[in-house]
Image (cartoon, rainbow, N blue to C red; front, top):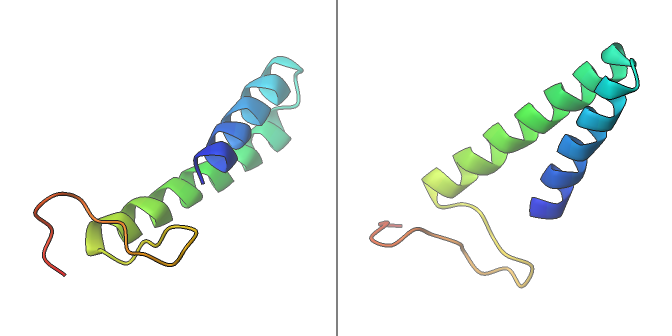
Length: 62
């Protein structure tokens, strides 16, 4: 997920400086939605790693 988020950000920056503002804005919007979804899943304790184990922050009650 981190690589996907970073790739979307890099793509946004490259397209922005290439004067393709509409596509850059679309990628930025997708990146924002992706970040909100992942953050929500982390906060509610529903995010899983590649092996299906829950990812939680220290002290989180599930």
